[in-house]
Amino acid sequence: MLSVIIPIFNEEENIPPLHQELRDVLEAHGQPYEIVYVDDGSTDRSFSLLRSIAEADPRVQAIQFRRNFGQTAALAAGIDAATGDVLIFMDGDRQNDPNAIPEMLSKLEEGYDVVSGWRKDRRDAALTRRVPSRLANKLISAVSGVHLNDYGCTLKVYRREVIENVRLYGEMHRFIPAYAAWYGAKIAELPVNHRPRVAGRSKYGLSRTAKVLLDLLTLKFLSDYSTKPIYLFGGLGAACLLAGAGAMLVALYQLLFESVKANRNPLVLLGVLFLLSGLLLVLMGLLAELITRTYHESQRKRTYAIRTRLRGGEEVRERRNGQADQEPEPVGATRRAVEVSDGT
Image (cartoon, rainbow, N blue to C red; front, top):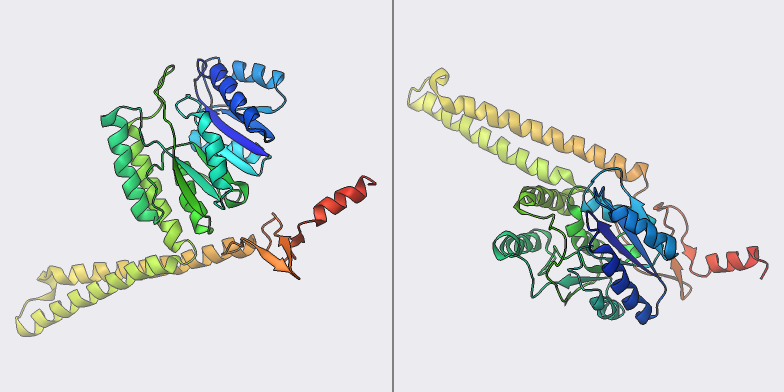
C-alpha cells in the first residue's frame, strides 16, 4: 500500500485542490493508498479543512500538532502514523506535481529503494531560493558522498524499511537519502515538474541556511564517527599532543642554546595549552566510545543492515524490534498465524 505524507502549515487555499488532484492521480494508478496530512500548528483554517476531508474520506488521516514543530517533525509524525510499505513525501503548497508519482513508483519497481525528485526547472526566486539551494546541494553531496542534484525537493518515494529506523531531528529530513544510503539503499533521481506557487506564502528563506549547515555538520559526524568517535576526538587529541610536544621542545632548545628564559617564552604556555587540550580530547573520545557502546548494546542496536536473508533457499524477514539476538521470522509465518487465528 502507498502512504502519501504531506506536512501542512497555513495552506488553507491549497488544501482542497491539492487533495482532489492527488486523489485523482492515486485512484488512476490503481494501487491501494492512504493520505496522511500533518498540520504543523497552522493558525488559519487548514486543520478545519483537513478534518472535513478526513471525515468524508476513510483513506485520509489528519494529524494536528499543538504548535509549529517544523517540517522534519511533521514528516516523522507522518512516518509513525503511516501503514503503507511505500512512503511518498510531498509538500502541501501544490508546487510538487502529483502527476510525477506514477513515474516515480515505476522507477522504484526497477529495484531502487529511494526515488528522489529533481526540480530541474525550478519555479522559485533565483537569488533567495535557487542559488542557495544549488550551493547547498553541492555541499551536502560532497559531505555525505551521496550525489543528488536536489536534496531540498520534498517529493520523494521510499521503501518503508530503509527509513523506519531513522530518527529525525532539526532540519534533518532533507538528508534522509544520505541516511538511507548508509543502510545500503539504492537511490535514483528523477526530474519532476515543479510548479509556481499560486496561493499562500512560502515559509522558506535564507534564515534556514545556518540551521542546514549545522545539521550538515551533524550529518558528517554521524556518517563517519557515530560508531567510532575515538577516531575523531583521538585524532584531534593526538594532533594537539604533537603540537604541544613540538612547542615544548622548541622552548627547551631556546632555553639551552639561546638563553631564552622559560617564564618569558610564550611557547611554553602554548605547549602546555596544546598538551592539556590533547589530553582532554583523548579522554573525551574514550568517554564517547563508552556512551556509543552503551547506546548500541543497551538497545541491542545493530551496526549493520540486512537486505535479504535466505534459509534453506527460502527468504526470511528480520523482526522490526531491532533485537539482533532473536531468530528472523519467516516471510510466510505471519500470514499463516493469521489464517490459523481466523480459523481458515
